[in-house]
Image (cartoon, rainbow, N blue to C red; front, side, top):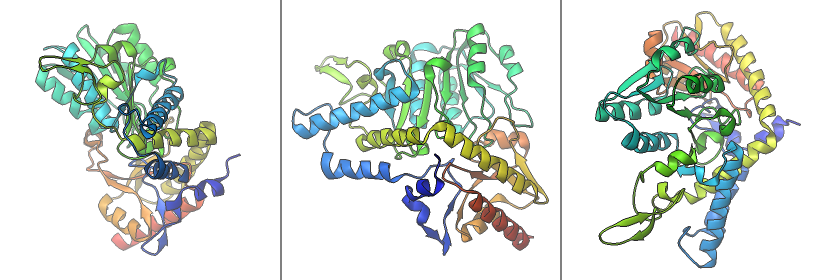
Length: 406
């Protein structure tokens, strides 16, 4: 059963006070908090296991190498990847996308080729493709959004041509909360094109469990810190047929079989794409986070978050002058809103006085706010450890802030 009291006890930071008030953490879209199980796994690594991997024959090195590769297998199983070597450890979503842009672009993009992304992407899934297109003299196209914050997918077939080489889009919008119909989108692309497909799962993985074989995407990327794991670690899933073709993204220790003064022979996957000493404790912590949410169950997580989303939406819409951006029927527990002409930074600053952590600004999605013709919003992004009582306190704090700012 879903025991919210027990769950909250497993997140030490939720007992913290901020400005003399109990912390209400509604900034999960930026980073999620960490359960004791993850914190303990990291502490145990530095206390009892610290050594480098893939290099030593001594006991510590052999033990931690086994543990690190076991973490890779846990992530493989979680994503339902066919092979463990399709799981590449990176620093996070941003590096994963940059890795694909660099390697895929090097071997597959020429002048006049086309890349398609969407108007709702995080900057991390815009800027690398802009740079690649500038470098290669390729063309970048966009799937637009509508007023509800949904992709206008009827435009996708019009955008795809024989020159389309890659299509990249988010699974869930970090700003609007929109859950995109990924499987439907991929089916459409496959029926029209041989383009490679990258899905940005950074905002999806805390809420749902992706099945990459069922989706049939070529690449799926996410960050550990949004999935209740450590910062500085992320995952690139790539189909083996693609990753095998990729040249090394970075070179050096860990990526090689042999090095001569004249020539280097590189290692097989996944090591070919994992240069240098990795974030070892990050990989282990991420695997622990996945075990934790799997034990809770994603059905339980989704039900709790859906209930929170319905409640917070209802309570916010009772406030005069409040406008919510992103009203898709298919969305997760993310609410972006403004109140009249009040600047979101002003409300965000006052909410902090009440111990409430939210995000205010453009949320690294400036093209969205250009579409809505606003500079940014207040964003409350909830997780399964949040409560109805916290929402009530949040709404009352907003009302008080409005009275002060009016």
